[in-house]
Image (cartoon, rainbow, N blue to C red):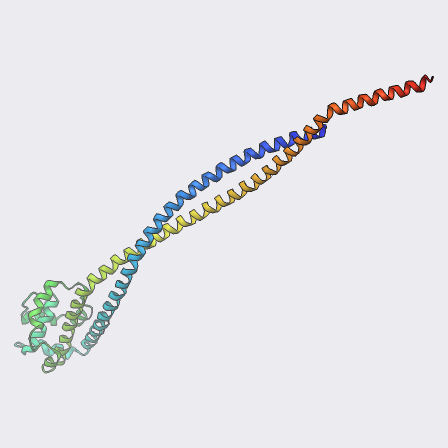
Length: 300
């Protein structure tokens, strides 16, 4: 009976301990679930933001790809022209330069092409032949043309140049009648004009592409933020799931302990109810034993 009482006490203590543990785990699980649900809402908003940015990005990407192809087509045509013009300058030698410097009253085509060259080199809107001679006397004349800063030609310079390049005879075929030098210089001037015209179209497109690149960065940032949030949401869900499983195992154990406690309590109650009957039977047996002993000692 003492062992039974001891087991009941142990079971009761175990039940109280498990109930407290279940309560703690349950509170933790509820908190994890609350945080998980909150995180899911945040993730949903970030995902919506990412999806919106991604849709805009896809539209812009298609436009960017089209623009890139268009720009590349323009540059593919212009760059070879510039390269050909620079190579053409190599045809001009010292004799050609000397010949041009020897003119006091140059042929009209020579004067025309040199005026265009002088305008590009920054000698005003209506350069004179003296300006042309000044340029031709520069030992670095051809190098100045070969390494000319074509990316920074001002629009005002192009407007000044306009009246010369629109002359009906300002073309290579006409210049061939004048000299090799005039032809090469004409090709160089036209190549610079062509490049400036193309870049006037290309530069705004390049700026647009830079803006688009910034949007791509924004999409990547939105994607990264969503992925971080998604990972956090998954971690919280995993923690909550683990906590729920632990709570389930403990609740099952608690149920088993309670069932065992109930069974032992019932056995204890049965024993308690049997105590009076057992005492009476013990008393009756003792009385019977005394009677038997008396009869044995004092026979009739």
